[in-house]
Length: 484
Image 1: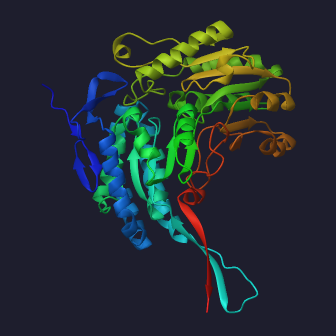
Image 2 (image 1 turned 60 degrees about the vertical axis):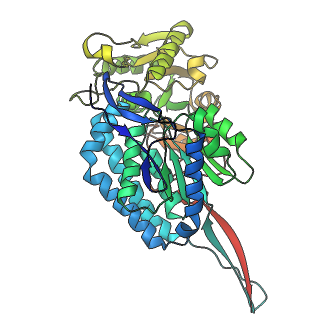
């Protein structure tokens, strides 16, 4: 029998199995014969233990010198960098993305830890002038308490890092639940913090299903903050279930447009479509899922796009030459194939969308990137998040028509414009309903030191992630009056 590692929860400074002893498998989406390990199928009792540990550890961690907190984040970053090749290999085997993308994600996660180790030490309050010479009035920022972090499978270490690092540096304690579809690389992040000497109970890591532990780690009164990235439906459920005293930060779905005006360089537009729509197998919340292209250049754009798509190599992310990996789960494969069939009924199927088979393809969740044309606003492929390598092409008659159509979805996460017209470049950030706005760049990607978030049903409207804004969510302001 194959020797398979069983990975444990990390609660109150100890690696331990869940109370029931139940586990679940984690397999490679590129090769289902590749079993990465067994993970704990935690229950409500395990969640209660983690929350209690975090609550108990909070006062001492809040009072820990911030330089000590920063040192732990920096040492955890060192650990990730030291093991970058091993962890990148594991991330590709677990989630399916290209090995180069996995290396980038590990490095970015380490950079995020280092960023907050520095930025967290710059938090300041304000002083306020007033008429009483015998009184001083100022504000101070302080942590909230226990913070729950719930993250998805598509960026299974970089998204946790950008939530956990600001939570810890500001003095909060953490209960972290990753997606059950990508628990291994999340375990490595927990391992890095343990190796860095995080005190008992300050950081707690547990795996398991949302149905088993979700309500415990979000609805318990001791939890003062919930930071979640995932589907809009799941985010809305969490947001409505928490108590009034619990702060929520939700980064949710997107239906992101790439607008191509008639003065655009077509080769640039094609390149941006491929990078934004098909890289990462389309499994990015900021991925390009709609292309709104000027009627006058649509035919030429589609011709060049299809020629480029024919050259794309779909395969195992560990293999040299692969440009598009598998979908991350069987469920996601079925969802994407379902939308492709819907697209064939609704619109004009231009290229791709086949379930790939034969040889190594038979062991994984592979589909060729798909393009649909003659898409109109009421179609499902124009309105619903697909989260796969499927792009819907919509004709536009100029800038104003593009804005109306781009804004005609429930989402508002990311949007991009391809043009050289300075008037439209200046108008676009005001006209478009999106939290991340790009010009002559892909809809995907964001800086570590810049805020990230969306509008409408793509995010809660209160707090942004990333950058200095990422610290705001995990701190509260007190106004202090001192007399003498």
